[in-house]
Image (tube, rainbow, N blue to C red; front, side, top):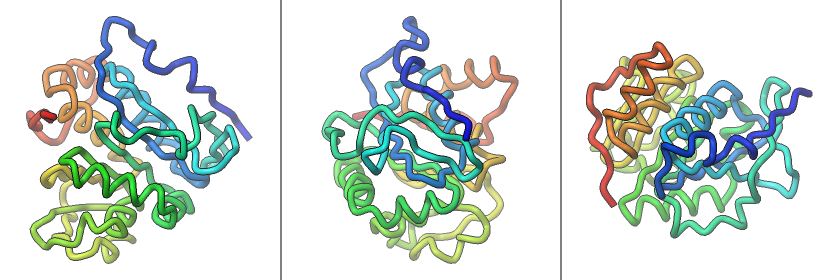
Length: 215
């Protein structure tokens, strides 16, 4: 089992690029490592405070491919009022563990009720469906192909790697994780900074100038 300590690389990763926005990443055992690490890395490069919260009392969340990540705290200890977005990584059984955790569902509903962002990639949009965020047919969403029949009443999008619908952001899988994370950075801190990060990482966003959030 390979372990990664992300605590020392938290908000102070780049002290010249910090803001007050906080992103919650609940991390369940069985998460997809590429997705989780990419989300944490890119958002911290953008100066966001990323809170990695475990679902159990364990200090490590264990990924689907044998990589363990040290969490910042237990989900029970998170004050949702100071959180601006909840983001879910996929993987199995990580995504089903997220879907079946009532605290995760409650956090998603809390964000949606207050006009804040929710985002999920790969299989994790099934948790958005469980929370009722995909119950309206006007919502567009994507996921890993095998889970596109579990997206509630949403309009399922199969030809876009990242989909924004209102304050819901979804993406297809490990290969789209960097695009997903950059797009999330764009809506939270602005497309200009996200574009700078993308250029520095030799990457591109599939969506041009996603609208930044206002709270």
